[in-house]
Length: 281
Image (cartoon, rainbow, N blue to C red; front, top):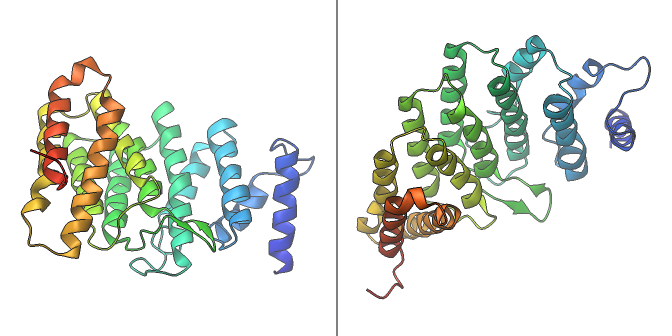
C-alpha cells in the first residue's frame, strides 16, 4: 500500500471518528482530489466504508460543497476516468470506479432537487449520460468475495430515482428510463441475486407514487416485460424472464397495500403469471 493511500485511510478513519468534522486548518477541498483518485479502490474498507460515507456526509448531511463545487465535482464523476472508466469491460476491478462514481452523482442530483442550481439542459445531459452508462455497463456482478460490492445496476438505479423526480425531467426522458430498466432486466448474461431488483423497483415505485407518468403507460410497460416469453428458448430468454419475474414480484409487494393501484396490481399479477413458467393456470 502506498504512503499516500495509507495516509488517506488514516485521515478518513480519524475524520469518521470525529463525526466528519475537520480540524483547524483543514478544508474539505484538501481531500477531494484523493477521494476521487481512490473512489474505485479495490479495497472495500477504503472505497465503501470510508470514501463513500465521506461524500454522503459532506454532500447530503452537511452541505459542505458550494453549488460551483458540486457542478465541478459532477463533471469529473461523469467523465471517462470515473463513470465511464473502461466501460464495457467485465470481470475486472474497473467496475468499482464506475459504480462508486454513480453513488455521489445521486447525492448531487438530490441536492439539486432540494435547491435547484442546474439548468434544464444540464439535467437532460446528466440523464443522457446515465442512460448511456446503463446501456454500456456489462459488469453486473453484485457482491464479490474479493472486493465487496460492485452492484452497478443498483447504484445506477439510485441515480435514476433522483433524476426522474427532477422538475426538469420530461415524460420522454422518464420513458427512456423505463426502456433502460427493461434493458437491464433483459441483459442476456446475468440473473440478479443481490436485491438489484429492489433498487430498480425504487425507480418505478417513485414514478407511480408521485404520478410522474400516467398509470396506463406504466401498466403497459409492465405488461411488456412478459414479451420475452415469446422469444426462442435460450439462456438469454431465461435470464430475461427470471429477472422480469423477480422485478414484478418486488414491485407488486411494494405497491400491494396501495388502494389507488388496484388496476396496476391486476396488471402485475397477470404479468407475473406469464413470466412464471411454474404457475398453474
